[in-house]
Amino acid sequence: MSQSWVRFHFEHLRRWREYACIVAKAARMIVPGARVYVTGSVAAGTYTVLSDIDILVVVPKGLLRRGLSRDIMVKAMDIGLPWDAPVELHVVEEGEEKHYTPLVPVECQEESGQGQC
View 1 (cartoon, rainbow, N blue to C red):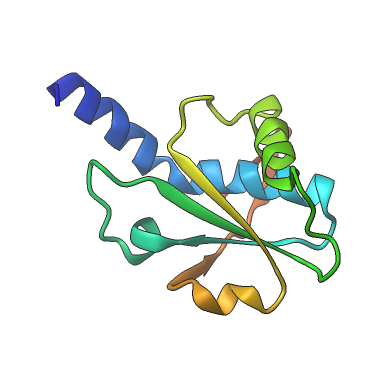
View 2 (cartoon, rainbow, N blue to C red):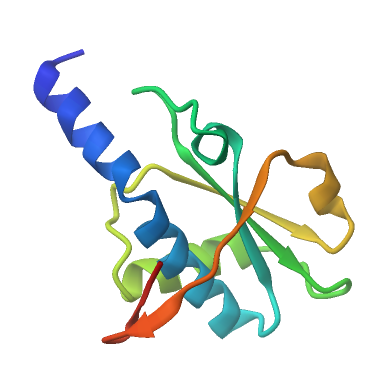
């Protein structure tokens, strides 16, 4: 791996809170009431240069549908998520979040049209 790629990737990983807020805003625009968490190595603080940012979206039962992950990611990119952000989106129904640890809730404040943590 080149040093420039490593620096570039770590810069993305350092922005995980910002990216999580953008994804949360997008998810809640599409599914009001969705709960959003960061999980995996970023949430645990053990990420490496090969890590991605795992974001879990929990939707009410009966609202999970084909293409929902894609729709959330497209909306997130429309409102500011870089197309090359290393985000791995997981969408589950209520009750299934217990299979993911740790869970760090995404809480954002609205500023200038984009979520900021």
